[in-house]
Length: 325
Ligand code: BT5
Image 1 (tube, rainbow, N blue to C red):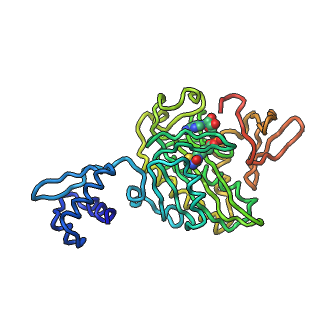
Image 2 (tube, rainbow, N blue to C red):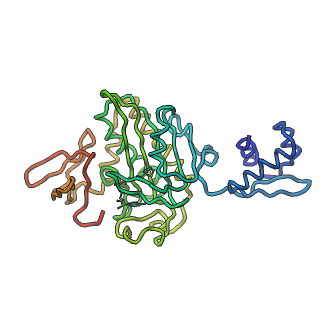
Image 3 (tube, rainbow, N blue to C red):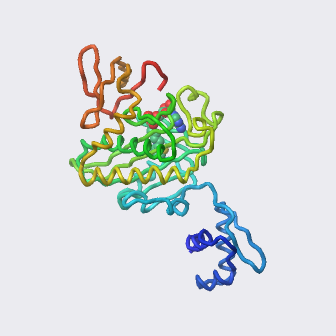
């Protein structure tokens, strides 16, 4: 009911009288007042004037479904958005609910207290400064194709940024880079048995409105935010919807055609590593090589002293020789 009242407030530019609202919704005036109080607690600024009624002055900077549904044009992704003010990790919660959730369900949180990176690393996720969300996918494909979903996520973030007028590069397989620093990362986790995928969790973290001081000092040489790069605050709701709209488009292509050529093309075209000298780190072994390209399967082709090799995304990290990332 609270959501319906909020919709009405959004629709109406002028005041809406308590009487009208109680008639429309079949609720007492006290019940309407209680819903208004609850909306105010959520951060909505609502003006209440005697004999005029209620008027929505501003919405809070939060990324729940109510706030993005008008600008979300998706068929699969985000038809259900499960919203939290704080979570340990959206990937963790998404995993817990995946079996009982429909495909495309999103778990989003305003902050994460134990945000996860790849290989047990950490993802710093300060309150309302970034976007931290996980998409539950149930693709009809075999586990060998899953690495491509990370690239699909990277392409969607890159194009979503572009829809907001922001240029970025993709550092295979899971980093989004602006001016040589990481602005977003992707963590894909899979649950499968007997060669069949139960579900995939595609986790995306984007640094949006952190100032430099809000990024831990030890990451200053390698991490950045859209605010730092653009010099202006970025609307998190618009950005969230832009990335989800692109994810939906790419995922539908992937499912229908099992074709990821368009995604691979974006990852090649906007690559931060192809044509560069890189270091491939696998466990305790680091090897210097030259990134040549991304093949049809989404794997990185690297020329080492010993010859051309295919690098799989699972257990490796890539560094550019000339940069920190
Ligand atoms: C990643 O790991 O880049 C994957 C990040 C995925 C985060 C999302 S947020 C929503 C969802 N729920 C989760 O719990 N996770 C996903 P990796 O390539 O391993 O990079 C991690 C490394 O990046 C760390 O070891 C730090 O050096 C650095 N780092 C940590 N936090 C950062 C941040 N906010 N911005 C840039 N770099 C960061």
